[in-house]
Length: 312
Image 1 (cartoon, rainbow, N blue to C red):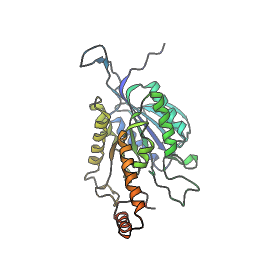
Image 2 (cartoon, rainbow, N blue to C red):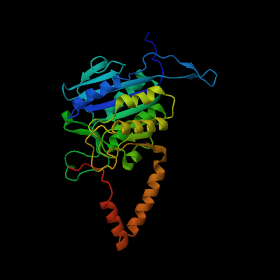
Image 3 (cartoon, helix red, strand yellow):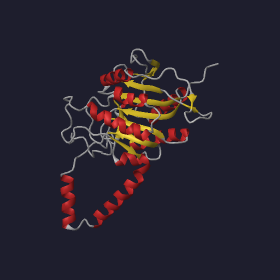
Image 4 (cartoon, rainbow, N blue to C red):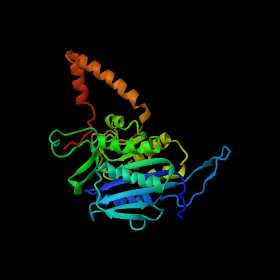
């Protein structure tokens, strides 16, 4: 009889859509993950508050990687000192990372095989946030993430992402604790509003990310060092580590960002308040649009505000 998997505090699930020009970068990031590695052996301990309820600890670090190099999909349980060549636990044929069912299947596998009290999903790829270029609408969506070149550039649009994560939240009986977007342009109010009912905390960049993306050794160490902290606290720490990783390293950063990089953690339980106030402001501006002073103020604000979308 197969032994029941040990419940850990966190399961981190990294959905790596590398069937594109990011293929080699995926191997680098997996190597960073292996500097930290999963907690391989843990035992439930008595709660420090007493009583019979167990306090869980330890972290699972899982990856699903779809590569361009060999048109294979692999799943990994990342160990300390392991990595791409040592930690593969499953290999199967090419998948389409732009298919929401593929993402959902990965998460279901992770939840079944590596259960935890809390779950952290990271989407790794290019991202398009809210923006759609009218010139491209006839062929490919830009409001997407997880682009797959072997599937004619298919990607998860915001609606498909909501569908997949809502299904998982329904199966868990609660929202996913943290959603990380290691991709450009994803931490926007439009995306946050789509996911408000299936995710607690969303971490990502409003600006284009540098090519190196997230510093996975730093990010995962935040969780592994103190897994008992609240998801909001962990989200804030991830933001700090991301920014620190780019300070003074000579990276060619986007010129439109004052600090070079952007990263934020959003409590999606508060996003309704943001949208409600944004709607009020929008309605008032629309009502007054024929006022020359108001129109001038809107135009000036637009022209002098940072623009968060691909420039090309």
